[in-house]
Length: 551
Image (cartoon, rainbow, N blue to C red; front, side, top):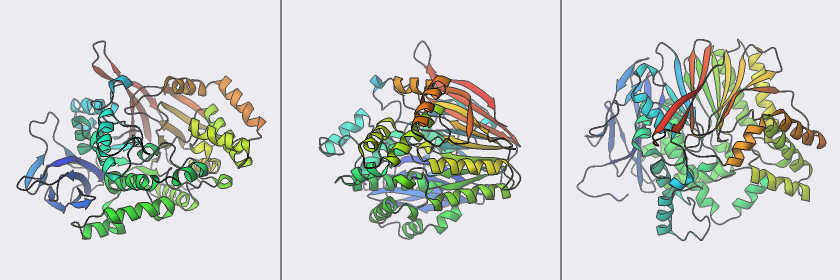
């Protein structure tokens, strides 16, 4: 946005409350021009990326378990909270307090209710509905953390208004067409997704942890070597992936880092040292290298929440796509995950949370199909049957943990070692939190036995989107015995090695727009699920549809 001389700076997005620990917090903002941002006496100069202005303010010296209301000032003028706000004051609640730890989570939020095409028939927004619910609750019942498990923006599914805006910039008949093409177009997507008052207040008050999934870049991102060879051969991909990764770094990844990690991050330190220089070229180069050499950037990270520990895993950018050695994480990244789990045990954590945008434990028949498809793709690579399997993989999105058999089994082995006490005193629960599949369910690992830790898959998606009716039918029957018998027959016919892991559905599937909550206290854990609907008069409703014990 061009700067206007003689006027005060404006707050375009934020504040977003991001990393919070017992004594510090980080807050992120986007402004319309260069300025100084102040929160609770702590100041930061904005930095510039391709003409856009951002700041990350580190607030230190907070007390453990404290609640501190805050305001945001730009060049000394208060810009947050807005005048005549209907929401309670934004505040920072540090970890270390008494009582249960509450965590809200979900994925897949397509724009905002006011910007989507009403003809799409998308149900009410779960994140907006959740914010409205919190306003009427005592503050001690607000969540301590919010985990967003991918697809905060949809680069390949745009709203009518954004399509018109893109058409004014370039010819939509030229690839990539009506999709985000560069960083500038991504900035509009974030403004559209995070600009509505409800979610803006929620993100200013509840610390958010985020990770990407495919739609933040492009549908089927890194599905396979064949997919990657095709997309990297286009003349538009480099600008697209650069815009996607740079915008993710600015809008999401930066806030995932702790103050110590920020101090050790060479890219951030270079930008912070020269805030008046445009960091676009530096970040473009970072994105180019990250896309071609994934080990150069670790998007995964850890959150420490007292007796709970979140290990957020990048299950998209760092995949190994060689057909005979497919892995959803490379070996170095998986070593890092295993070490983080081991440290959790050393720290006597009661609840180990693995955040991954893609579900680990799927409905049984879907799991069998993905294992079958991977086996055929490897066995018949370069041959007609292999090409047919590849076409099916891309058409049906057969790309979850099950489609990367090595990684699926390695995560299972880690959960078994954890639950058997081979890493130390077993925690009460190990919970894999996921989204992506546009429905919600809970499943539990039941074999092998002898586990002192209960291992669950908790999947919640979408926050704001809709699933085609065919997908609803597919996932409803995906847990059925007859569907499992059918896909099991396919698996045996293709001589696909069967996993020793077994799991059982606990609840679901639930369809619609949903948000999950974990309530963790001592060694006890509960999973709550909330879903949106409409009254007879069309007003949005937000209803609890599940409350189940996990420990």
